[in-house]
Image (cartoon, rainbow, N blue to C red; front, side):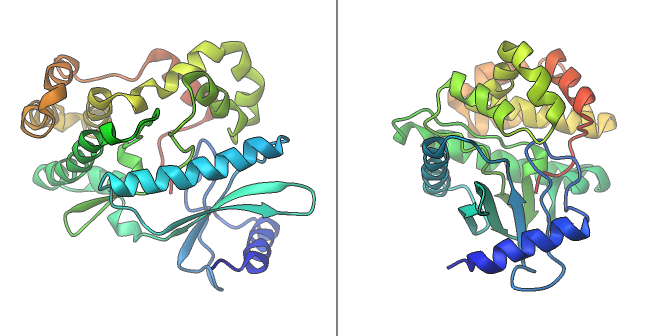
Length: 280
């Protein structure tokens, strides 16, 4: 059981010391790993609170359901706990997660390894995507998945998924669109975003589409290593009929050429200074 007093003290000391986060450019928060103490083997993610207690309770319940759904769908994950930490003035959502080796993170490995190595990483991530969507029919609720390259580590040939926030379960499209603004770490997004609510809401659509999650993975790989784009497209065109036959026609249409990010999301990322760093 998590020692809440020790966790609160760890977060306080981190904020006071202005320690370096594990990932500097996250959309919802800047995760950090304490250098010492009881949480030295954990990554801590502290999110914005909400003024509505019922909304926070719903968020906690949804996160629990989402983690259980991912595990039931066969998605490998590190040990992950969600807490509403009472700071005295508010309850703050906090995720405490087993730390993964930095050497296993998929994004830097995709940048550093040779073509056969990166194709093996793509295969590992693709198998998790296929496994999730094949199993997703069992959940009688709206459920999504955000299997981007930055949300995976690959260890022993197996991809491990570690991004569970926001919990992509139960919430309607409109509710999730509002959450993208409510929990954004970037004040500019919270100020400007409501003026562009329709476009912000559209950011999530890929996460709720089996073919688009695979196309998105290939597109990210092509942007990271454009010199290998043709090989990544060939991999995706081979993988879809082999591992995701239900969606292969849509995937193949999406891979007719190197996939591009939607223009509005590219604009948001530039506005917010987001460059796709690992979202630990």
